[in-house]
Image (cartoon, rainbow, N blue to C red; front, side, top):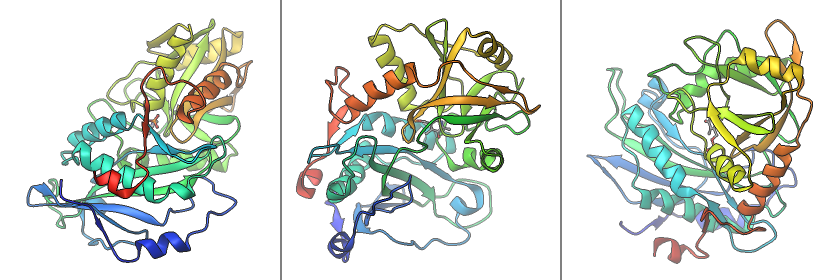
Length: 360
Ligand SMILES: *Cc1c(COP(=O)(O)O)cnc(C)c1O
């Protein structure tokens, strides 16, 4: 891979940056970003540049046809000086699968890691050090070719931007069950991490927030009877002391956190079942107490308890336990991610301390 270029202004942007007291989630941009372009069938060399607006043709297919795929991951530096990533190989594999579904080229794994590590390395002094905080990394690829004929672009851009962040939604979530809109259908793009899926989900999410709730729960497109996931988070339920989560289909996003929790929970002796979960059964079992707890998981939210589910008819369902097993798993997972506990799974990858070590 050709050597990484560092553009003018990067050092100044880093020197001028101050980490604010309040971070939120994705609100404070880190001062540097990574960029590479795909042209004539190949990726050019990576560059580091100051974070800021980019130029894009108004007719670019990313804007006109949502030709975009992305990832979400974190660099951690809790109460230590050296930073680390969590399962970056899993994020690259998923990006490759997402890109394949959309007919786009993915960046090679080495370029993906170069981008992630270069941004994390240059921003390491700004990675917040309180437990639960991290540098949230957003790598994404989008089509830059203009024209309205319906086919993929032949030119693309890969960017890695980052935000020092807190947990996505702290505290217990309040969930609305979405009975009208659908997020993803069989044969569609549901399993790909693409902005297009979010476009389909934004209206329900906004309605949920307007009514004092946090997030929408999605059902399958075909029957509207099976639980799939939340907008941006996967779902677990505790039934008779076992952990159940919807089995993956092509309309469910395969979360890295979901996969990690399955491994972690089994390691801790829980029985974990991946199966079809009918919404009617879930609501009945919350009602009779067999389902004691419901929680969400994702990179941003980590593991978030759900306090209440509201149906379209206005009825509400409150699991009897909130944040019991969720808390145990969140603390265990966070301790591994933040390197306060042993990592028996080989999930932790260090961030090189210097840019020279990144480009190796
Ligand atoms: C990213 C995402 C998730 C969570 O995936 P993680 O890899 O755990 O962060 C769940 N659902 C959707 C729709 C997503 O986009």
